[in-house]
Amino acid sequence: MESPIERIKLSQTAKDQLTKLRRSTKIDQWNILCRWAFCRSLAEPTTPSPVPIPQDSNVEMTWRVFGGEMSDILLLALKQRCHNDGNLTDKETLATQFRLHLHRGIGYLAGDPNIKKIEDLIELAIKP
Image 1 (cartoon, rainbow, N blue to C red):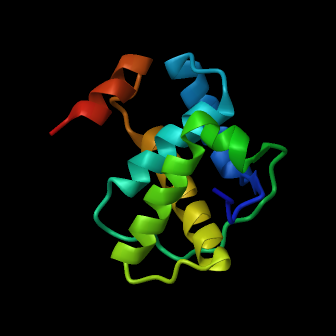
Image 2 (cartoon, rainbow, N blue to C red; image 1 turned 120 degrees about the vertical axis):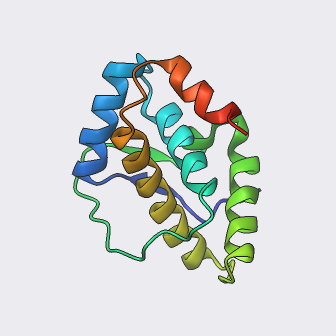
């Protein structure tokens, strides 16, 4: 499946937040933490605020690196979420919504005082 997002470049704030998460969870790969963050945001019933997000860090990855073996599933989840939120599913909207969800999710994970190790991320995922 072709992705509407070629390259993902994070804000400096998101990079700093991910660095904090890397230390606490011991997950070294940016892309894995970004997947957790993206899914965390998708789990929220509200839509992310449409705020401008700078691309001012040196953390950059392709969509395939971000999604890995799950890239098609993550793209389908994004499209479904856009549809559910009443957004279009054109390339530009998908790219914008992806960035908003990714950065919101990073902020949620970094700001959660209960995330101190990888098991805390797993606990988040299996909560009812």
